[in-house]
Image (cartoon, rainbow, N blue to C red; front, side, top):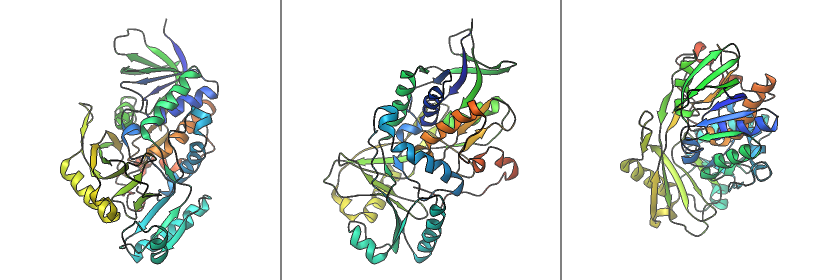
Length: 383
């Protein structure tokens, strides 16, 4: 006899693991399939920034809800996952950037997110380790950073402890729709798993699963080129970004400096990704240009992973436009780490209550039907 669940989740990244935990806390029976290890792809190899500042307006309601969850990780998953509210400092290259930062501060304020505009002299006074080339900055004190290696596995363990069936190294070979819901066939198992609701959090493979169930959307892959240095004495306070995108830098509690810029290469069919030496060299030059004291610090490791990217640089989050009982959250385009805890809560609510109090209309898959050549939402809305 086939096992039957209220919710089946395909993909054990942060959004999927958070959905499993929130759904169990709401009383649902849950099974999650991850073909590798939970958090092994984009959720575990990203930069680790936890920021609301600089986000597209469509993401801000999720970012605001997620920020509250980040403060509550210890009680929710049994670990703070090294989350620290160090603040996020977004630097301006020009007066035009300062104008954009001031406008964005007004947008943040409408979501009850406080940010402070710093003119050039105040930036130099408060953050003297930043190169004296910037026109100013915007500082959001409640943003911060966490260890991406810890977060998705912590959510998975907490969900399992509450009774969720978390299956790692378990490949879903085929999904069909039946009158009772969804049938999922697993590699090496002749009996399908049944579920009333299906959540697609398959990351860079999310569009392929969506297409197999009738939802067509373009999704590319990206491989953020990440670097980490040897531990050094405390130097950098806030998580550093720059208006318009580019280099992003943070210092961990252990002293290592993590930074990223540019892209490596990835092949989602072979499950392989690697950073590129020339991209790493350029990232190191950019890091030193932003924080000159990094010039003599030893770079010890580079890495990357496979992440999905949508044509407009924003994720798909919400119900399928064509199939009842199917919900998507994929293609996070480098924005998923901070959003993940709230995305999981929203998915659980959609599955079990058919609505969520968190606004996600701007992230609907149906937006691509209206704007197939949507503009890139990068620029200010970046790390």
